[in-house]
View 1 (tube, rainbow, N blue to C red):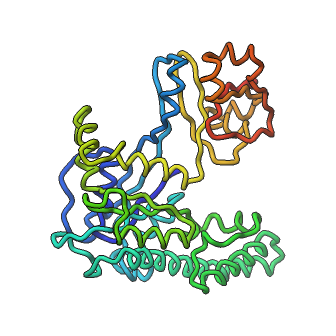
View 2: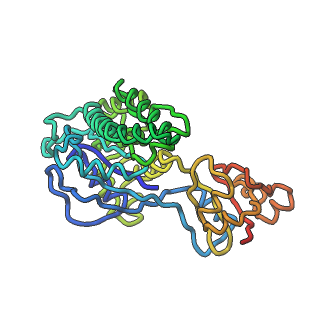
View 3: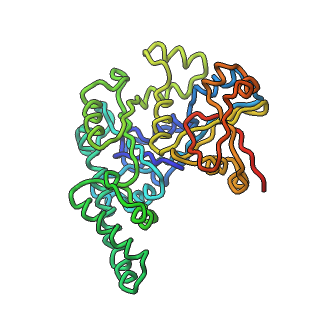
Amino acid sequence: MEAGIVGLPNVGKSTLFNALTSTQGAQAANYPFCTIEPNEGIVTVPDERLRRITNFIKPQKVIPTYLKLVDIAGIVKGASEGQGLGNKFLSHIRQVDAILQVVRCFEDDDVIHVAGKVDPVSDVETIETELMLADMQTLENALPKAERSAKSGDKEAKVRVAAIQRCQAHLAQDQPLRKLEMPPAEAKEIASYGLMSAKPILYIANVDESDLHGTGELASAVRVFAEKVGASVVPVCAKLEAELAELEEPDRSEMLESVGLAQPALSLVAREAYRTLGLQSYFTAGEKEVRAWPVPIGATAPQAAGVIHSDFERGFIRCEVYSLSDLEEFKSEKDIRQAGKLRTEGKTYVMQDGDICHFLFNV
């Protein structure tokens, strides 16, 4: 699973990406399209539950989950028609699982805004429109082939035609596809098209140092818009986060305290991006390691086991499960078992966020 960082040029995308992935290097030039080929990086998803588990189980190492991030070049109005190398950049978005849109919510005369003025809602709408226009083109190109196959009696093609037409009607109402509920069979048939306005989205309000909590007028406008489309907003001062990323402890903690933050805002970005991707974590815990594993919300125990190794899923027998609250109450796995709190779950068990598991399998 990976998320693409998008936005108009000069909104702080690459600064944020570098801070998230702790990438050091020369500062990007202040002009559009300084990012051309997408940069890729890995970011840790902070999880306080790992520390709490290690209060009772002392491992040799602790391993959090990670996200893959892709820094995609700035998109401009007309991208769906090829403006600003738009077709190439949009193809990069088509390949990711979720979109993190950085929105400029700060004034700075030294940083050029591609539209000539700072208007975050207009910026959000510009990119949303380009994604929808690109999806319209994709569907328009796909429909004739699907119709020909449907006429020949292909049942799957008939479902595909219905799905395409349903999407076209929704887009014609100026609504992104992520707000469209589709029958599972239709959703499956068009999944390969990589429709961009169907992807879940998280807005990152890039604020200045006077509005770190995003309560100012510009960030608040993004919040109002996000509520209408069912998305979340995380306020981040990319400039400050870039400075924090270069510091070692305890200098980082001292700087956070001086600006009134309990933790780097990038921790919130990582966790919200994880949630936007539809992921949750379960844990394995032993003397060798305590580890968080990513799993889609709604995944069954065998599917979760498969995240560790495909053999675990193929030969799944059962899963032994307990919770962090059980561990904190009884202090050890042995005592959890003796208290009858260690649950045995089968193939139909749906994983819960924070489950601590042992998988039994045979291949």
